[in-house]
Amino acid sequence: MISHGWLVPASLSRHGVVPSVLAFSLIAISGSIAARAAAVDLKPPSGRLITSAAIVCNPFTHKIYAVNEGAGSVTVINATTGARHSVEVGREPIAIALNRATNRIYVVNDGSASVSVIDGARDTVIATITTSRLPYTLAVDEAANKIYVTHTYAGAVTAIDGTTNSAQELKVGDADGVITDARVHTVFLMTYEDPNLRILDGVTGAVTRVAVGPHTWGMAFDEATSTLFLAHTATGEVVALDEKTHAVSAIPVGKIPCAVAINPVTRRLYAVNYGDETLSVIDLQTRKVIAIVPVGRNPQGVTIDSRANRIYVANLHGNSVTVIDGEKDTMLGTRDAGKNPYAVTVDEASGHVYAANYSAPWVTSVLVAR
Image (cartoon, rainbow, N blue to C red; front, side, top):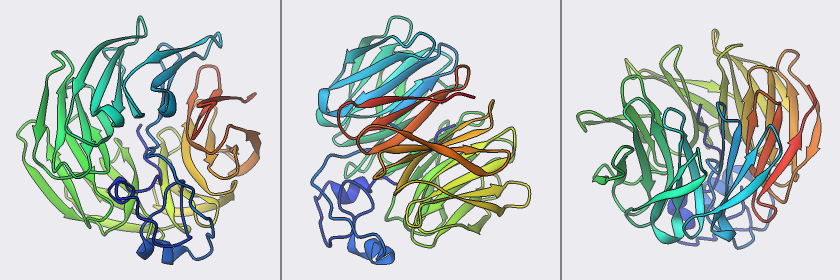
């Protein structure tokens, strides 16, 4: 399950816009949104482009892959043995995705406008695919063996054939976030400023637009109900979109929700609220908030261990990961992470949690005993 967190709209950070002293992340955002969060008083340091798709776990091989943006490499960690090494990729890698069916890992290199393909059996780069300028993030349709790469200011999405590594530009507009439903080859494309979500048919190329409101960011897809959930940063809601009917509804949560994740076993949806530093727990049957759990300073990323029923939240300015008991909806504790952790993943077999950081060490192992 892919989830995208609050990580500065690429279309704004490309300009280097710094309209006020308020910031939600490591790079300044637009004044219109900053005005909605006057309680957040952080001077934005100059920084790089980041995305919550910076770290991923292969549940079959128990390997962790994390981008090292400033080093031009990917860290590979064996969650079972703890062994780790680095794989050189392109310049400024910022996003990573996994095709579990082929054991291929795809890395977006923002600085070199390319995608590196890593063979997960050997952990070596086997191909480098040139893309349009300013690639940002990506998602995989495992059933079709296609990879979709978003761009800002390119007016297109790149579709990569996982068998041939050939790339095709799809003129469907800019996009910040992307997620797929591989069962029907549907691609959801979100742009922060655009109030319309674009739904791309991966077979026909047809695009449908559905109004969900502007300033959405984090996304998670629930296969059980064919529903896409989006964090609506401006209104403090999670928007639910029915994939089949395109009906839209809203669930009130906390202030500046930025990332969402689903536990398919317990049927719970979790929304990270950056502005009031909480986690909203939503019952997917009633679609109502049933608990609010405090977390660390300026939470940014979230992941689920469905086997242990644990939730892990990366606290961007707390340099920590909060551990939450999914049964009791209570905070179990906080573990140290690296500098500014903004994305997090877990190997459910071992229970080991890993955070992607803004600077070296680029990935931190957060060992959690069950």
